[in-house]
Amino acid sequence: MTEYLDLIMFAALMVAILSGFPVSFSIAGVGIVFAYLGWALGVMDISLLGSMGQRVFGLISNQVLIAIPLFVLMGALLEKSRIAEELLDTMGRLFGQLRGGLGISVVLVGALLAASTGIVGATVVAMGMIALPTMLRAGYNPRVASGIVCTAGTLGQIIPPSTLLIILADVMSNAFQQAQYEQGKFAVEALSVGQFFAAAIVPGLVLVCLYLVYILVRGLLRPGDMPPAALDQPKPDRAEVIGAIIPPILLIFAVLGAILGGIATPTEAASVGAIGALLMAGIRLGVSRKLIMLGTAALVALGIFAGLFPVRLQRSDLEAASYIAGGFYIALAIAGAIAIALALRSALRQDVVQEAINSTLTMTAMIFATILAAGIFSLVFIGLGGEERVAKLLLGMPGGATGALIFSMVFIFVLGFFLDFVEISVILLPLVVPPLIVMGHDPIWLGILIAINLQTSFLTPPFGFSLFYLRGAAPPEVTTGHIYAGVVPFIGLQAIGVLLIWFIPSLATWLPAMIF
Image 1 (cartoon, helix red, strand yellow):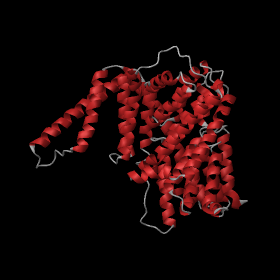
Image 2 (tube, rainbow, N blue to C red):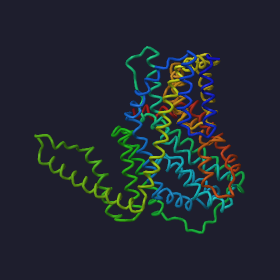
Image 3 (cartoon, one colour):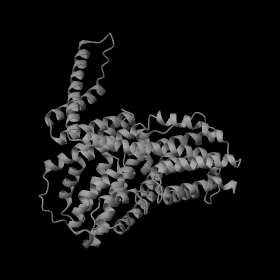
Image 4 (tube, helix red, strand yellow):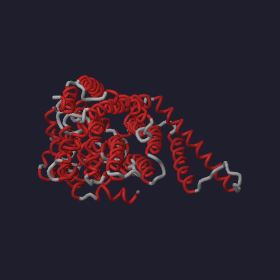
């Protein structure tokens, strides 16, 4: 029995999580119990837990993961200031009078919010409270409407910037370095968050296209499921559409452009995104709007001019033109600081910042507590011989590298029925990814395949997080059965997305190869 202690430990983890006990405490508790059990039975060296302090320090000092709370704050500010709500309302009125138009608008808004917030819960709840009642009033089938809202909300996990991609980039980079050590390479390469962001853009757009094609085809074949909406509000004019769409798009370009262009690290770009979201919130709330817009324009101009014509005032050999440019930059920075202060004051007065920070702290604490707990679990699992067992299992799979990858993808998909993407990423992936890379799979391509698979975990009953979020926000006439049945076709579309990336690897590898 002692030789199977690692497998029993994994089964115990599933039971503890399904019992409803808090996830991070379940993971850490199971790890500690089995550490002492293995020590008592003489199959584990308990001193292995001494390295936990180094893991905690490594997590806290990890420059990549610092971007997570900043991106979460960016999304929370956009949600709490009702910018997302305004975008959803405008797009609904724009497309609503087409057959399936409300569904199309929900998917497009989901994509825009994904690229500007990256928060699944906020997007699903917002669309469940705003779009779902409108779709039901228009005569949409409750199953179809629920499936569209749930699925569009999960785009925040695959379209960058996303929390999943940041965690996945860190895990995949560590696994890639470990695989290189195992191959005898000591001048190892590392993978960056920017590479995974670039790799996920085209697959994310492919998924959006799959959803839109499905909605259009279903609207033609079964028009009763998605009739045109008889909207009582006028169709938005061009200025209203531009006013709703342009700010999120500018924010997306500012954040992703800075990362992919090599101008800023993901953490620096996340801070730019958080400030940008605060300025957008200030403009949306309508207090000192013109001053905030002028200050925002000053900050944009500062970023452009300082990048094109940098000035270092500490040098002693500067010409008069450099001093003039330096003074101009200082004036732009002061104007930007005034705009940020005005936006912050407006957001504080209407409790937008307080609510956004509360959401940010809650989500960040959950993510980091899970990662810390997973560190304990994985240490014990390795100490009990689990890592060697996983490597042997993958290497012994029929079909070689392809068979091992198929098994891993199916296993991750099944775990997605019960576990969150964070637990799967930080517990399972460090075990299965190094052998897969050693077998010859491209780490970027592999990471995107896994990312789409993990995104599907938000949709799979009984514990898909999107299903829970929508259940809490949906009107009473939408049952849990409607929600479960509604996501089934979209789970199939996710599988098609995985197959497309599998058979056309360039969808994931072309853009990062071009940029990096």
